[in-house]
Every structure is written in structure tokens, then in C-alpha cells.
Image (cartoon, rainbow, N blue to C red; front, side, top):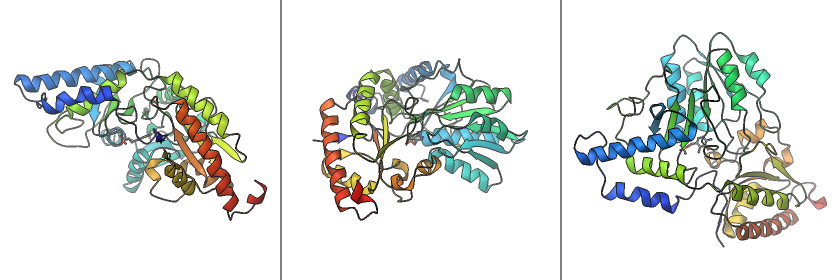
Length: 381
Ligand SMILES: *Cc1c(COP(=O)(O)O)cnc(C)c1O
């Protein structure tokens, strides 16, 4: 049996999405900037897709800019705000952000900006008190993710937005994991910028979007033909943009996902010396991040793979390194759990049968690995 439980890394393109895209690859391939009808058809498709993304956030279509990825949306948001507002040089973020945010911030530190990285508690929440006390008269931007990609914890972006508004500071959130899973209404929260990505919601890879509240002072970081309100020059990727919008429209089956996820967690936590990381209730509907003490996450991953089950250790973005994840470090996970942590992320394509299969394989593999584990204390587990 093949079971894909790594939907936090990427998702299968929904067949309906692929179907909607195809005609824009083969027949309606015009450049949206061209004046003849083939081009204008692409332009129309672009604008109707923009409306769909905007509606999902209760935003205006002109507040949505399509980008080449979620990473690019994060970079345009952070660097664009910084370059347009040179009178301030301090940014506040958290220790558990995605590399697309952390690395952009590191670059800014290299060129002289000051960045405060807020600590998180054991469930992955920032402290609103810490946030407020970190603000100085030089603070320009707060960038704190909505839902964490590793442990699934969902921050209170309404409360963060209120603090930013009170101090007249821009607020950006990376909502790439939460988009279409946890609603965001930009009319109800004070937020200036939101990053989105298509391939985490059954759309194609290589397309994202950035919500930018009307009248926000932002500069472009990419130079060229001036597409996307001059914020993302480059010929618009119409097939992928169409696919992204189609992915927003299709049934999310969140109840189905949550049922499978909750059942999975309940069964797996029956294995001795296991621990669920992240918040119990304020967590992404499709995320289960579980530590198996006295086990190497990598060997667990390989054994699951041999049984057709795809999962990840920590996050996909850092899976090329064997360093413990910066997120698990930030939540102060005890050492014996740190290396044996696996992220299981579900989708609406998963079935109960797949989950039962995965649970039974997991039980067997964990028990076998612990029998041969050279780690201290294993005799008692
Ligand atoms: C996947 C992801 C990104 C990067 O998006 P890409 O479209 O892959 O560039 C950024 N932030 C978070 C939280 C993510 O999960």
C-alpha cells in the first residue's frame, strides 16, 4: 500500500485542478499583456483567479499579487516593506518561522537591520507581552507566521494585529500552511501582508500570492516589465494561477481530515514513550507531529518508506540536514524526544484504511527499532 502523509511538504495536484490548467497550456497560451484576443483571454483568466483568491480572504482583487512561490511572497513582503520605509530599521519575528522568512531576515541583519526573534512556549506560541515589550520607536514590521509548518501551532494573529495597529507597525503573516484550513478575514483582523502558496492546497508548484492591504508603502524587489502592479515582473504563469484558484474552489473535506488525524494521534499515542508536539486544540487540522523517544527519526522514516508510507522528520525544508529542527529546539523538546520526531500531515485523499495500515506498521517498526536501539534506557521501554 502507498500512503502519502507528507502533505505539509507538498500535495498532490487535484485532478480537477490539472484539468482546469491543461487548456491554458495547450490552447489558451496567450501572454496576458498582449492586446489581441488570445492575450486578453489570459488576462481575463488572470483577473478571475485573482478574485477567487481575494474572496477567500475577504480582500479586494487589487490587494492580491501573484508570485512565483510562497518563498517569493515572503521575500517580497519583508524586503519590499523594508526598502520602502527607510526611516525605521527594526523587525520583530519569531524563532519558529519558515526559512523563507528567517533567511530573508538574516540577510537584512547582514546589511545592518536589527531583528528580534521572539521565543515560543512549549506548545509553540509567542507571548503577546514579549511582542509588545520588544517594540521600539524604530520598529517597522512584525512578521509572525499563522500556522507553523512543523508542529501545526496556530498563532493568535488577531491579537498580534491589534498590537501592531496600536503601535502603527506593519504586520505580515506567512499563512501558507493555514490557507483554506483556518479562515482569515482581512476585514476582521488588522493585517497588512499575507503570504500564500498553491502547492500546499492541491494546486501546482511554483505559484504563490501575496495579499497587500491597499495603500501599503511597499517597493518592488524584482525589476522588469512591471506585471502585478510592478511588484512581480515576469510574464504571468496563467496555467498555474488558474490551478491555484481552482484549488481554492474545491471541497476541502476538513472534517474528514480532522477525523483521520485525531484517530491517528489517539492510536499512536498508545505506543509507550511518545509525545504529541504543538498545541492540542489550536493546531492545523491536518498536522500530527509526534516524538518517539529512544528512536532515530531518520531510521523510522526509512522503515516507513520501505512500507510505502511517506512522512518527514521535522520539516521538508530542513530535511537535508541532520541538525535538530530549529522549531523543536525553540519549544525545548527534551533530548530523548528530539531525534525521534516525525511529522505526519494528512490530506482529503487519505482514507481510514490507509491510516489503519500506517498505525499498525508504525507500532511494529517502533517496537523493532527499540529492541535493537543502543540508546540508554531502552531496556525499559
Ligand atoms: C511551504 C512553505 C513555504 C514555502 O512555499 P513555497 O511555495 O514552497 O516556496 C513558506 N512558508 C511555509 C510556512 C511553508 O509551509
